[in-house]
Image (cartoon, rainbow, N blue to C red; front, side):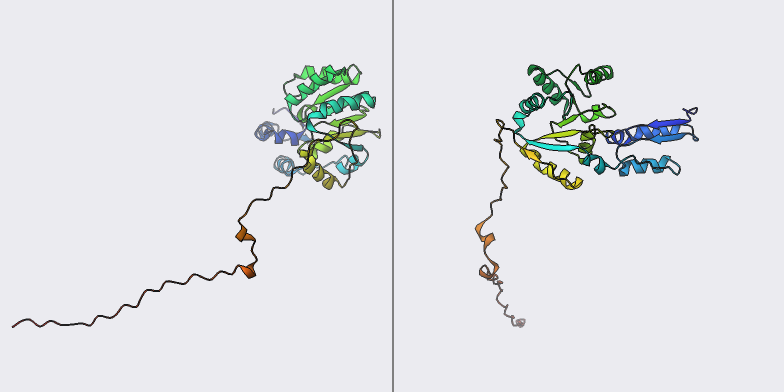
Length: 280
């Protein structure tokens, strides 16, 4: 490590989020003191800034593009759908809109495997990449999408980090991420280098609050649509009002309770002192 003159660390924010802080610090500390460190990060959060302050000497910050401006270039749409119908709706969208290549994001490895199985049964060639897939298999799946050997690539956020698909026309959020940053990363896979891009989110009832938070943060209002034949059955959960006792609703003016009278102990009578004379 002492012979290292340049040290490049990519996806710093993701590595820190996954708990590799101690590993990164160990590598930095053992490197040549005169080395140059280049850190690449999709977000410049407090953890990244703290690491840079500790190990970098007067670092220069280079920002490529603001997240919000890149989001503005992408056509976004929300499809309102029940959770149990998402796989059917996805197959319908790909077929009815003639999507040539689609990158679909899910939240779990199990979700990725099951979705690929469903798409294959519907006649759509698909593959997935996630943490349990070897790097060689990931590269093969990515190459197949680029060469149009498959139509759909299903990916988790971690596995998709760092991949670049030129002129990717469509990105689909099959499951909404729980982070606004992850949302911008996902849809940012399309609409690159001045090309047109489309981002579709399949939104079920339980994710309404998260989507509202994303729209508020990005200062956008994404149009919503319900597809004929896939009307919503799920209902928004009603607010549960906790039961309270009736006396808690009484107005103060009518519920003045008499203060309990203090029990007063009867005054003790002073005993007269008597002296008994000794019998003589």
